[in-house]
Length: 306
Ligand code: GUN
Image 1: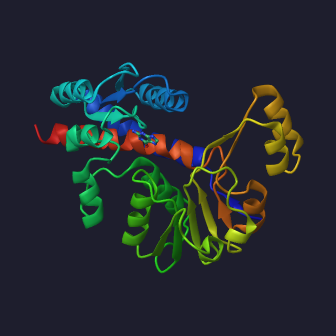
Image 2: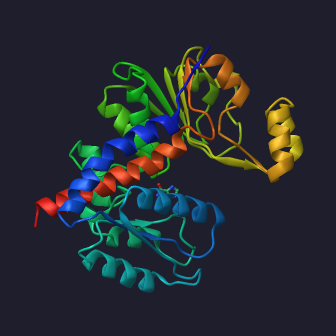
């Protein structure tokens, strides 16, 4: 039986460990402050930002949401970020991605003060990651490492294959695994013989955003499989096919009109992997927990430096 890597459990442990740190900051009149910038009405982003703010409020942080319209310009976003950079009560700034096409996302991420960059997306912090220097790490990759560690999955000397080369997940998680002495291969849509490469992985990380794209052929028996995908299935026939007519999934679809699935075939991964993250309830909760951890760390560092 494969071990299920329970992201909700690890998230709760991380949140518990943050509580006394937040209490100490509050006692010093420096409650951590998080500003989330959510542009327009991108429904997935709205859900993510709502969860991030809800968690921060549960933990007793001060958080606020700034919601520029879909038509916002790069200059207006730069002015907004500059205001947040200047505010002493804000320790963390998160600009939810994706941004509308007319906004130059790279310029916006570059404008966030590196010491308030709780997403770890600023090129300065990316450079720190590459060089192995301290600094905020991107939240989903940091969450993946926390999950592997909490379940004592060995990393050193293991073969890790990361499918997906995004700046948010694929590239940073590859570097984190490399720094822990895994032998890392990064694959993407143009990689020939993808299944054979994936089958070599002791640790397989899938972050491609394609529903149930990787099946048994891609999984080495006994591997640790981390599924970053969060794909919405909106057609009943896809739910029936992918979940092999599971009555629970079909009834969930009938109730809600959609069902989530990761990048891995959910039945194959449960049968072949040694350990795997479920979708939902695997990597997703960790992303938010690590954002909270980065915000607390930023507040502590800023308090210590004033
Ligand atoms: N969009 C998808 N994932 C993320 C994330 O971790 N942070 C931000 N800011 N935007 C995202």
